[in-house]
Amino acid sequence: MKAMDIIKLREMLEAELSAQDLAQIEDSFYEDFDSLMKALKIGAENSRERGEELEEGLYLEQLKIAGALMREIIRLRLHKLVDMVFTGSGSPGDLVEEERKLFLVLKAFAEREEFGRMQIQVPVTEEVVQEEPPSEGEPLSSEVEPIREAYIVSVDLPSILDPRLEEYGPISAGDLVVLPRELAKVLVERGVAQRVRISV
Image (tube, rainbow, N blue to C red):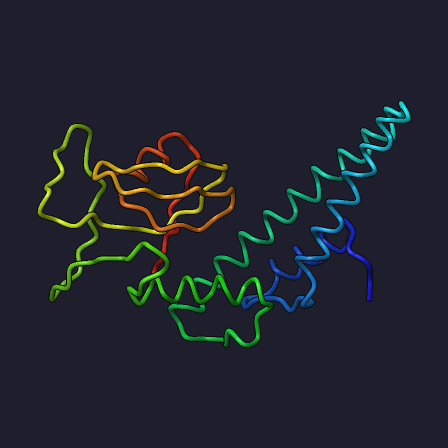
């Protein structure tokens, strides 16, 4: 088995780009990536301690490249996981453990199930209409439950309160979370959250 390195990450990205379905990965893929990042960080720290600036710079550049490649791989695989949820193609049993858990979270979101303290509450009507986020200064009715949607958060956030004083978090960078629209709107405007857009 080939050790995880930047070349392997590039090959993985190419395979993901060229495959319509999820490309096959090893069960230890995400653990191997974490080990690679840890090794590169240790290498950079050791080089810094020895005063070898050139070597430290090489390690830091490899960290940057590896992180960028992995983010793109995850972005592509996340889109394909969302497609799996709505098309029914593929089986969660074929996924590695980390992706299987994410698949089940997405499936719960799609089926309006409860996860954790938060529950997705969507009014049941004969016709589902996609609503736009409330405009600035628009009052929120206290009689209507907040519409909740899934978002990917790009930074670590402490616990935050929505206008109804419900607490969410703490949230880690990269987490997929379900938030009320009025709260998510603030995070999106600040550029620290992105809505998971699902098309059926």
